[in-house]
Image 1 (cartoon, rainbow, N blue to C red):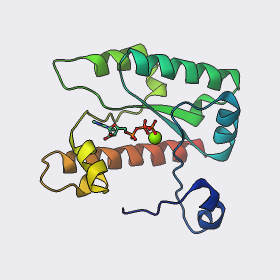
Image 2: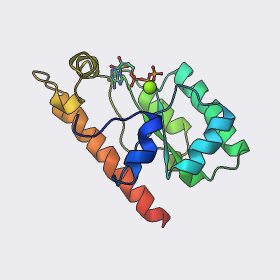
Image 3: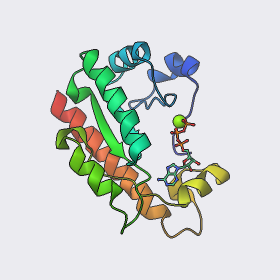
Length: 154
Ligand SMILES: Nc1ncnc2c1ncn2[C@@H]1O[C@H](COP(=O)(O)OP(=O)(O)OP(=O)(O)O)[C@@H](O)[C@H]1O
Ligand SMILES: [Mg+2]
């Protein structure tokens, strides 16, 4: 992997040596966890599959974030596993959510992600899959959006 992966317990040791720290969480964080997660990071990325399960889960989490008075600028939604046309779930989800809540970048559904899991590599490093470069570029794009968003906060 082109980045170091450590457990939560090792973060204290490694955080001082790295500029960017990405924390992965369990599927649905409880309100107490959300409060701490928000306090401990600059931006929460809420990956959401644009179907009824995904959107219901997102609504619950956004409701909790609002109740906890977490500022809107602390979280943003990434539409992911977006099915290809003619399916329009991705576009419909985008229309149903406030524009400021959404990253411009969306991640399409692609088999290359399953291959990456099997091969134990990041998507860009999957061999013989025509979408590997495309989707890894989209994640780079997302990275640039995140950096721009953080820059606009200061
Ligand atoms: N864009 C995508 N297209 C197709 N499959 C995907 C995509 N993104 C993730 N997946 C697949 O979905 C599965 C779960 O992905 P991932 O571990 O990122 O999800 P998660 O929500 O973090 O799961 P968990 O709740 O277990 O932590 C993996 O098999 C992965 O290959
Ligand atoms: Mg996970």
